[in-house]
Structures are given as C-alpha cells and as structure tokens.
Amino acid sequence: MSESMTKPEPVLLREDTDACVTLTLNRPSQFNALSEELLSALQEALSSIAEDASKTVVVIAANGKAFCAGHDLKQMRANPDKAYYQQLFTQCGEVMKTINAMPQIVVAKVQGIVTAAGCQLVAQCDLAVAVDSARFAVSGINVGLFCSTPAVALSRNMSRKRAMEMLVTGDFIDAATAQDYGLINRMAPQDALDAEVAQLVDRICAKSSVAIAHGKQLFYRQLERDLSGAYAQSAEVMACNMMNEDAAEGIDAFMQKRKPDWKGC
Figure (spheres, one colour):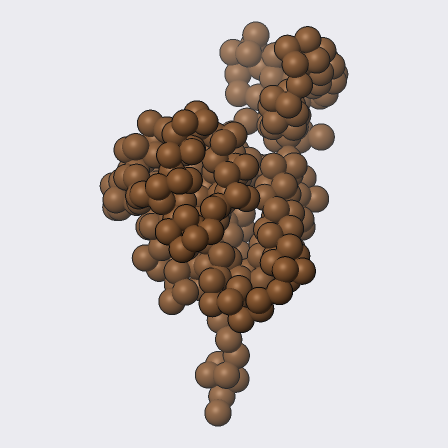
C-alpha cells in the first residue's frame, strides 16, 4: 500500500501569501469539530505566527459544509473523566487566548454552519466574514450542556441578552442576524466570499503592522479597565506608537501626499 494511501490528511492546512497566513480547518467529514489534535495544531500554528513580524493577518477558514461544529462529542464521550474535560476546555481556552494576544489580526472566513465552540472561535477572532447562507447556534444546551466557555467569547461580542438567548435556546440564527448581533462583520454570497475576505485582508495588510500590533493589544486591554485606567493606558500606548519609525513615516507621507513606505519595526 502506498504512503499516500496510508498517511492521514493533516487536520490543519497552512498557506502563506505575503503578509497573510491562511489556516484551514481540515476535518470536513467531522464538520471540523475541535478535536484534541486540531486544537493542538491550531495552538502550534498560531503561536508560531505570533512570533513572525512579517505577518499582519491570519485567516481561519474551513473545508466542507461546516465551518466548525464545536468540540468533538465522540472524542469527549470516549473519555468520561472530569480531569480530561478540564484539560480539553483549558486547551481550547489557550487557543482562544492566543488569538486574542497575538499581534496579527485574525479573521474568521465562515463558509458554512457554525455551532457551539465553533461560535466561540468566530467570536474570538478579531473580525469575521461569512457567506450569507451561514447559520450559527450555541447548541450545547440541546444535549444538556450549557456552552459556558463559548459564553465568554459571545458575551464580549454582543449584548448580554442576545448572547443569553442563543445560549439558553440553542436556536440557529442566520448570517444577517449574526451581523446585526455583532458576531460577524460582513456577509457575502458564496461566489463572492473569497473576494470579500481578500479585500478586507488587503486593506489591513496595507497598514503599518506595528500600528496594528499596538492597536490590537490596547483595544482588548482597555476594555477590561475603568474609564480612567483605559485612557491612561491608551495614552501610553499611543505615545509609544508615535515614537515608532512607521508613525513618523506615515505622517510625513500624508503631509507630502505620497504613499507611505512602512518599515515594520
């Protein structure tokens, strides 16, 4: 039997294009459920990209009919142990925290159905673009499991009442409703999804990666502080940003009516 017939498909694919990295969930027959192996692959890839100053954007995409069906319930039921579950949910939380902490902007490219921890993944990404036929549900409640960890990301993206309704009903919402709720930024027809994501990625990559990194870090940190602390922290970050070579170049380019030449350092 040939190696190509015996070697399993990788659960995560990576494609690098200039300043953008696309990570594609590749468990289509399992609806891209977040198995231990997929979570480990995501953690390894995201941690590596976070250290790469040449990258400005990460796109998380998926193969198949579903973007992500949440945790792998079959794998979970095969390991009925509280310590195992604690480790699994902690592992997932580490992936989500890495998305939040990394300097690159992370964009979810949603091509299909999203459920449970899949909604957590979409909500945790900095931006999200979905096909207009996508549907979203936090469906753990339907099998007797309140989606507590997805609730962390959802409640930080939409109003409490909208998040709670999704969490306690398990009902699906369509892409238009998800956009209205703040779960996604944009939606597009199936044949225009690639172009919509590419346009967004190109616009971000055209900006200073240093300013993006400063801004993303500040954006999330200030949300956890009171108004006075938020302004104090933002003033410090902005002052540091102003001392960077890219800021000087950008302001000079604006005044001279030319395109800036970002240094990225």
